[in-house]
Image (tube, rainbow, N blue to C red; front, side):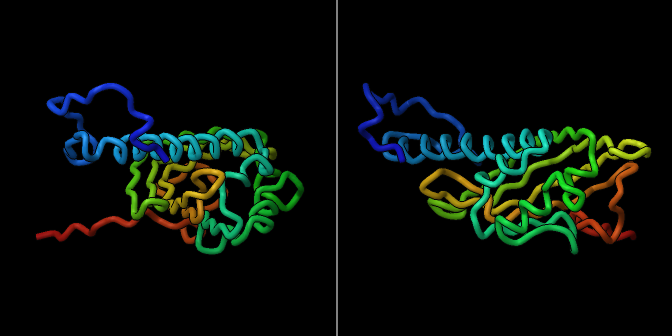
Length: 190
């Protein structure tokens, strides 16, 4: 955590910056707001590292991004609870997700981070994921959102809970009831 000893020089309190809904930064809250910026960058880094290691089919490098008691749901009946179960889900052997694909490309954007405490945050991000299958079939695409719960640990920010919610798929092997839809408000027709 940053402390006032990290900030050197004088502060010009007439300078304002926008942090989440026009929060004004001043000498009274500078350290806490700088810490939030550092935390945001650290959380975003975890999201991007996840996509990078997933595309490299390297589940062992993904595990440190999660807490040991992780809960991941890619769909109502597909995911894992706990690090060992998640490692099996992602593995390159015949039973793991990585064995289905010759290549993937996961693109994460539109990251929204809401701090729910000093050491906890809920995070939403948009996903566009391309999948090239090992077997003869058209390439698959998933469009959706990750809904995550992050916690700060002694090793840094980690994902405790992750749920994939889909907006749509194209030629993807999992369809309909096998995926969690993004909740949408219903539109009332007059």
